[in-house]
Image 1 (cartoon, rainbow, N blue to C red):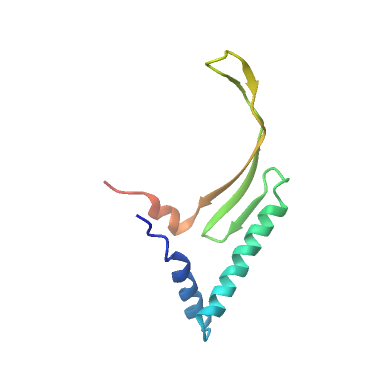
Image 2 (image 1 turned 30 degrees about the vertical axis):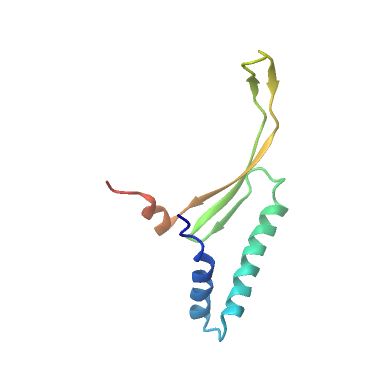
Length: 104
């Protein structure tokens, strides 16, 4: 089930309403500019280990560098060192974080 297909359209509609824009196209352009700016900021700081970008009470993006680890290959018995990795992580905050908990 793909319930997120209309997510970007709903976001554009909310931006249009909040900023009282005359057309949905203008709201979509603003959403695109914000998303592209977030992406560019994260991309420019990929080399900085521990870089964080906090977006109010919405959430926080963080960049973390992870060194390679020694792994044993079961079939051959060889031990190899895996590649170093960079991870960009998102942690939700505020109301979004509280709503993640599912009560059974």
